[in-house]
Image 1 (spheres, rainbow, N blue to C red):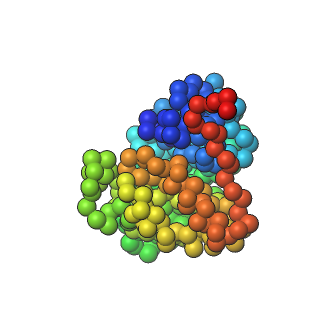
Image 2 (cartoon, rainbow, N blue to C red):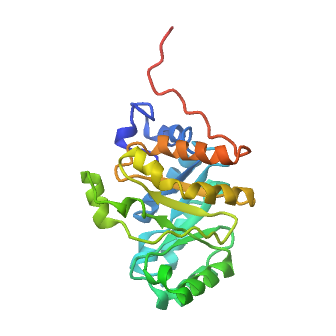
Length: 275
């Protein structure tokens, strides 16, 4: 996402035409999760606008359509997948990875299906897989089987870290909603490729969000020192402060790895004046 009602006039200029909002967001962060592609494949013209609004090194991690991953469960969605791949073609190198989020019911017995699906994908893209079935985090044999499957095509395993969020009961409406919807997955910090992708869910209280991401700082710094290029996505239940918090996380990592390039400077949000 690159637009949120609470960001308007605070992080992003307001009013702002729809075809300029991604450009404004790209002044705050250098990557974005393409969650909307899960629900509908965008028109090619829309994707062309995304490309126009971002630099070639901006990172899109786009979620595969729901019909492919959840409805068809990686079997028989060839036409929908082809349409999706054709639609996102204008992004070119901006497509950092295609994100295959699987339902919680997709378990150890489905790994052969995932293997066949991954082997059939075009090698022009990188892939990142998010699983939610508990066995993928608790059973060593299942973990090994999934890692081997991902390794055959150089796909990454996307951890969704909700440990800080579920540490204490919710205190806001947004947190209570997330409490019932988000998966309770154990912390995983192992990267399989040179492009780790992490999803982190904090709390609506920024202080607690910052406290919760502390274990990730040495992990991400270590990846950078190893020559990897990680992408870290930060969420809170209401996402009200997400752009600012993302930059704060980047600054804390940069304090450990000074050679890490700074994020771009956001454009001014307030109205221009003559003085």
